[in-house]
Image (cartoon, rainbow, N blue to C red; front, side, top):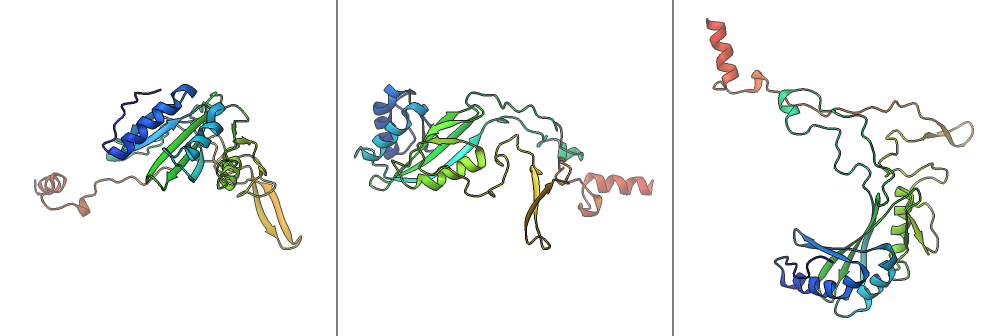
Length: 243
């Protein structure tokens, strides 16, 4: 586990960091602090037991699960935009339209849990990594019932499976939806198009007619019409005209 002497500048969080380091080092936990926030990384095999202790240990007291979400790291650190110099020189910023997504990573996905301790007035982020075509982590519905719909949302949008969930099914997309729309390799135009057909009095599915493309953001260029009289571009143009 990381250094148990982690300091955040907040005496309460420093106390929490010391307690977390003491309790979860033996199960492979990794604690880090950034911008005054604590993140505890856990292996999936230790998740349910660790969450139960986080809730029931009075020295920790995380009785509430505030949020749970999925993360796809397939394109982590990659970008198809040159975002610093390109717009200054006035050309399109789409520099790589064929990013090589790392979809076979053993830890491609993560499930992130945000916990709250009302008794101690502190917060904690849990992170569990998983991967494969069918990423799987244990369900924490037995620990916090609020995880029920959160886990269904992560399953629907990312395809992350939660072992032990009482009713794991889609919650946001349509019943016939194909794929998981928040995965980085999901096409922006989708797999199918749907519309209501008044003649058939029902929703029908059709092939997608939108051609996928990279949109180039607006580029800001210097324009002498909007520059002050003292700007070099304006004074240079005037000198050239008077020469």
